[in-house]
Image (cartoon, rainbow, N blue to C red; front, side):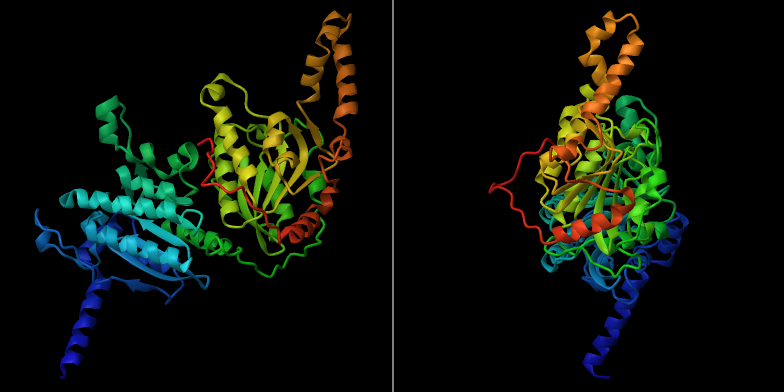
Length: 517
């Protein structure tokens, strides 16, 4: 047997060892926790047979605390690239079986390498997180590794899509890398994120809380707004990640992928005529409106469990990916509050970064009043949404379905802040406030002095509606480009987006703006 054949046979044995992982017992323990191994997760995410691993033979060089006798291959993280729906994607996955997925110097350098490759190749990066934080035995070298990851997260922001999938614990500074990415997905019962754990919280504040109660999937999907979605299984979570990737461009220099639609672009949306009540105070589900308009009634909603009074979703219109922002009358009457403003602002900013046109469906009674909202900074947080829309250069179309009152009307991508087209249904009511409130302010003295205040109030309300809130008032003044038949909504939006597809807009020359963060 030649020396080269011997070396080749040795390489085969080493690669088999790498693929098997540390020990069968470690794999059994991972499964006993209800969690898949890193390689099993990559198989679910990446198209079959397309994964190419890099640095599988990497081992740490640390010593002390027994590390010199424990030098497993991969050093606890699997890195490489493959394809999702035939398109290139880069991935790294923590292997909890090795040092609990904790990050050391070599581990961090592998992640740095794959992040640099993703940015250079202009392809999305997906991180499958299941690690115990910094490797304590390596001290400050491990912490410095996190700094390199954070810096690369920021440099890649708005350049390539970055998706974090939480499939285990993520505590302390390690939680900031997912927070810097575009989307965070979590799985119930097995994934948690927090800066300080339950023990520290109890020691400092006296509060007793479980890991899931402090930073579990449902907490971040419904309370904090950190997670874009929470799932019951890793399989369901990774399937949705694949679906999301199919809607995103590879980088900020490309357009989102187009698919040939089965849905006719000129399909009439007659169902909309019965979905939306004429009375401005009656509720309805905006999801059904979106289903009626988009291709095949399918859309991918971001953060459905948090700030439900605004809907943010990716869908296709005539095969082209479109970002949809819509007030949700079925939740808090569709009012804008702090959380809704933050949610929509970040979504608008993401769509603008990755060349995804925006359609805004407006049915908003205003901003949520209250001492709590004012003290918590509704002015500053509401300004985030305003800033995001004003700063967006992608095609922007707003459609006013029903009411659009006050400052919230302006903020929801009105014509005055740069919407390319502003459309409205004949049920629209655009005004500073509702007719009843306006009449009570304008005619308060007359109403107070009247023999029959209620009759005078109702009379003045009708007059105000007839004078300033009829469906064609804004169109007559050029604030709305057209009043359209609801049944024609889909075809009008598709034709308008097609016209705007070549839009080119430039922002002023500057280092960067100073948004109200």
